[in-house]
Image 1 (spheres, chains in turn orange, purple, brown, red):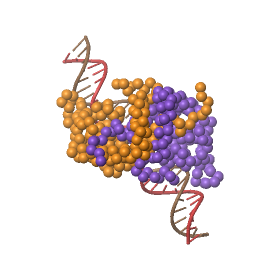
Image 2: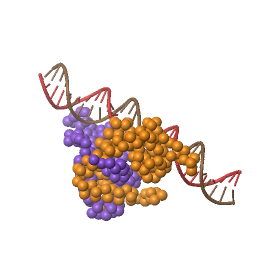
Image 3: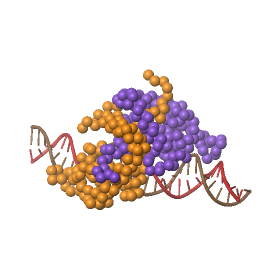
Image 4: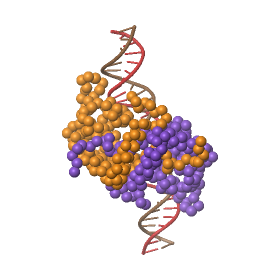
Length: 154
Length: 154
DNA sequence: GATTAATAGTTGCAGATGCAACCAAGTCAA
DNA sequence: TTGACTTGGTTGCATCTGCAACTATTAATC
């Protein structure tokens, strides 16, 4: 079907990764140096900050982060005093995760910085371009990988 | 300036990461199960396959992969019999990396599969959409992160 | 030529990650 | 109730990664 040889520079997954790394790098430095946080920790915090108390399972479902990562991030955030766990009344296996005051403060701080960072990024791109990009990315995320990666309809 | 709280789902780095993960996942499985390769190994192989013999330094420069990762990937590819090193005549510190027959065969195989994978991805998006996305991503990659991440002009 | 700085590449170490195995609690059905 | 199965969450282990330190060589400066 095709006989020209492969060029990494035109491989969509590669381009996406490069772009992701390029844009993540700067903000990663922010939450790392300011709070010694890992990316997963930051994401878990952001979910709890935005959506309020929920269980680890819920975080997994919303964020597509693996449960192992969530588990460890939650443990770290707990020892950092950013969240507390309390047993779920409905299900004794589950724990309800809730940000502490400190957790909310950290989220407020990083959230503001993230917004500023995002604005700067989008400004570089130009406003409509940024919006188009958003749409495209959401589209891709919703679709997943082409070869029957179907376990996402759960 | 802003007083609504932060939403991860609108954070560009996050969206890019999600999209990158979603699209990488499938092909990662391919090179991993077929050749036990790591992503970095695959990328190094792809660079050498596409551009021919070069030094590790060159790979770093072209790909923006960290030298540590390149070093280890090269070592692994060497023990897999995919490439050979030979001392550079100009610079006794540097080594010229060159694919072996096996390396070229692996690259040919994975390259074809990658092209197919990429085509499938782009088909899902629709042709013009895919092209627009390409442009945007390259734009982002060229710019880097907004906060003076200037060490790229070296 | 001797000294100092820069560069190609490797290595040690401390995290971060993915995967499979695991525990405890819930569900379902006979 | 008992037993088979699922599910929320944790842990062990075997990588993969990032960073700083290091060796050997080259370049620059005096």
